Length: 348
Image (cartoon, rainbow, N blue to C red; front, side, top):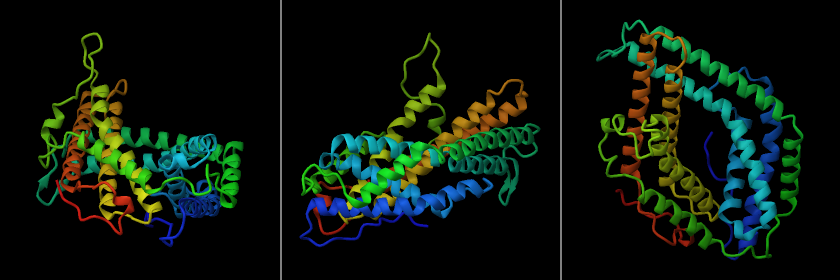
């Protein structure tokens, strides 16, 4: 299922208030239609699929777009209502994303370990025949299965909670009326342009020159710039600091995408960039999981070594995603939200 916008291009005479109201009422309606199906899927699915089922995927799509509109066009809405709605939507988004996230991480890590320890057409992997590979695989599988089971239990509990019912009531009211500050909703395109400008600024601050090689092995030796605690550098904190600006740009990119959809000016280049930064985040999260597993008490040195190799493999995937982003990044000109179509990209 594609992650396509649901707002159709409106007539040129429509006011900003009408455009925002049409967008939000459509997304709130999609939310209410998807919610019962998503609740049923969570209650019945065995937890063995990587991607969210249809109802859950539709629900997540509407949650992201409503939240994005309330953030980018915040000046057009009642501030208290908008902030409360964003808080509750973020809660539901984080809740529903946990279990599919663990499933994807499990698939990524176990697939990487199998590739490293198996034989490919061009030769055996560097961990082929290593005594620690089976134990490392069993450890990762056990820890991720436990995390996924806990996440599933949490979702089951919260989807029966009064908090979710309150959010559904909020979406029901949104279908009938959007609480705009003024009837016309305030300026639309300047706010979308501001989202694009924030994305451009964030991307320009990324170390794209450092990521200009296709498979940056220097990333394994570089731990970023974080203060040393008691003279000892915390590698986990350093890597998190190194990843943080890229993850921030991913958030800015999503906001810009959703803002342009409201303006009926989608930019396909942003979709590809979003997928690239999604790979970046998933590889980064997988590397953290491998490093955490390697610190499990009482495992053998051979098992820890294999987990260290898997961690390095995922950090190289992080570097590869950064390289791909630098190759894809277009020139997003100001005023794009008000133009009659997407710009021609200029690759960096």
